[in-house]
Image 1 (cartoon, rainbow, N blue to C red):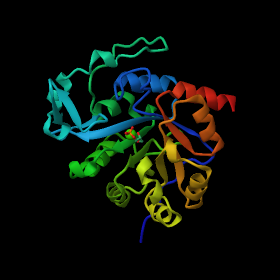
Image 2 (cartoon, helix red, strand yellow; image 1 turned 135 degrees about the vertical axis):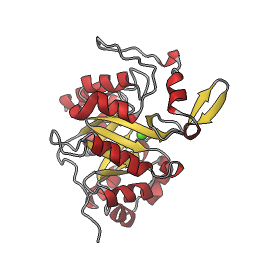
Image 3 (tube, protein in one colour; image 1 turned 120 degrees about the horizontal axis):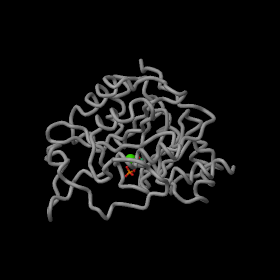
Image 4 (cartoon, helix red, strand yellow; image 1 turned 180 degrees about the horizontal axis):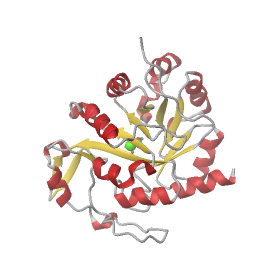
Length: 267
Ligand code: G3P
Ligand code: CA
């Protein structure tokens, strides 16, 4: 007997700040997340890997540049990561005035993000290559519980979890069915998205996150018919955002949450 899946808000269009407001600040920095909150994004998106000493960190890539070399995050300690400054070239133009002492180039752990924002924001967290980090699902769930983040705060679930790895999502669903889960698909997964496949996914997930290039009206209808919400990534262009709203997707991942807010207001 499978537990019921958690529900996502109907009749809402979620603006998910992809790696924070990453068009304006280094991705996954506290500053990028702060900007996303100021721009009224509904969720801040974090990609998560695990260090050698089992710290969960907000980073997109599985490897980090160390001098002329690349090293797996799994082989790097958190202390080493903290000593690595992001390249100053990652500084971007910030469009709003901010009084902040946040170092935009510092790499942060999920614990630091949770203790900084508490339940004042909503988190949309991706487990990246979780099979590389056995047990990461349990560690993340424990952190979320310890930080009191597993509740419905402002009408939206405080936490949504996502992954390309269905097994990791099924494990989380078994352990904590109250969390809405999103199964991710890249462009090359397009042919998998059949009616029968989506019905199976709907047994553990509340929605699908799909590359915007493969989003069509037919796909949106097929997913909705299976009871799944649709969150395309990564939609940055005004016309593309309008098109997604017209296709009745349930939200978008975007690097420019301010633009998405503006487009949504116009429609
Ligand atoms: O999580 C949805 C989308 O962000 C997946 O792509 O590579 O930006 O994590 P990526
Ligand atoms: Ca992601």
